[in-house]
Length: 554
Ligand SMILES: Cc1ncc(C[n+]2csc(CCOP(=O)(O)OP(=O)(O)O)c2C)c(N)n1
Image (tube, rainbow, N blue to C red; front, side, top):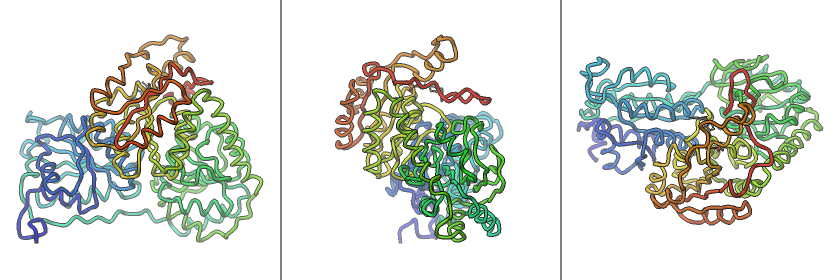
């Protein structure tokens, strides 16, 4: 029996936490080392059961843990220090909160006698718990060495229970050093079980519809098999960006994520019922909720989301998979739905794809080259907020499965490089990571992390020398006054050279596919820089979604 499994020998809490994480199935963690987390990180290194990737900043570490969680469908772990370090992770954690990503943020606290007392101890910061509460689904603190593993288990369980989300755990530094008896971490993530009577009513409404549709959001990512089976019975489908590929994106009865096109509006006008599953009906996918949708019924694991953005005729609280399986059990094998309506849905998607291809102009070969390889290879497709994502990345490049799509739901730029690293360390093949030159500048330091960790990721850098979408908005809405958008652009070849990252520049769209194939074939990370100033503009410029009531221009 080794010391860790011998319950008679007390162990430092740092060792217990490292072992408990591994017992919970955690294989990767991301973070930045500091005196306030060294007992845990030292134990992780000594035990050798978890691969820890040192990021260059806590924001990057959080984005890496978030992307890793999304693509592996398991707990992501980010380890930071107290105070500013935890604060550095906050922006990225807001993204994990927006996306409902199960990330465990293990941060620290100063010694307990000084904690929460504003005594100006080193690394104490005001209101850290308040900050963590604002950016977390839940916050836990290990008050004593003997309950640290329980606190960790409770935090992990909360992150993984529906509706999933990031959870923070404070481990005061004195607690990390103290010893306690070993104990095994155990969790049982909770499901939200739908009420059978509510499912009966929902099934009756769907059975009575002639032209029903499913709107599948990120909450339905774990319900792909049930969703696909329902569609086969005669229900049309459309997804949000976060629910992409819950139903195969090329299915003849699916709009894919072409959810806001004129053709999509015609479909919604023809439909007589739409079941919204695990979706926020986000503003940038519904024209700030001004888009006309059919009569709605809704299922969600989070009851507070009931009818939040559109009135719904029936709400069922429940996990997407349980709701859809409940419907499968209640509905006949073939619904008597309008076949011509179903076929018109796929046709509307094809129309949307063709219109988008025309809008891309010279970039169509780039989008097509990425699309073929990402879909065929079932590769993770990671995207920063950049024009190329708003146009082709978010819908045209097809995903092979829902968990393979990673993008910033909150619309925050600069998270793509780190997300590409997290996804590239998931063992799912090479992640293809789309970034803009402006956004990339927030996390150039993480390129060193990519090289050092040998992350399997290809960064496709769309370089238009500045904030392209901001310039387009300034042209469209601010009389062409281009303030603060033409920022200095570094020489990315030199930046890559400085950290030893393979780099190739493409100045003709036709040369892109070969460059991508070469980067995919070589081990480790690489960057392909697409020189948009050489290739020229898109056929149609993209100036963000319409500035509506919420001003959601991004
Ligand atoms: C964190 C954050 N800060 C600012 C913005 C506003 N913003 C949206 S897009 C953009 C420019 C992105 O530039 P780039 O990465 O070069 O992509 P491009 O627009 O040129 O395609 C900015 C500053 C934002 N969305 N998120």
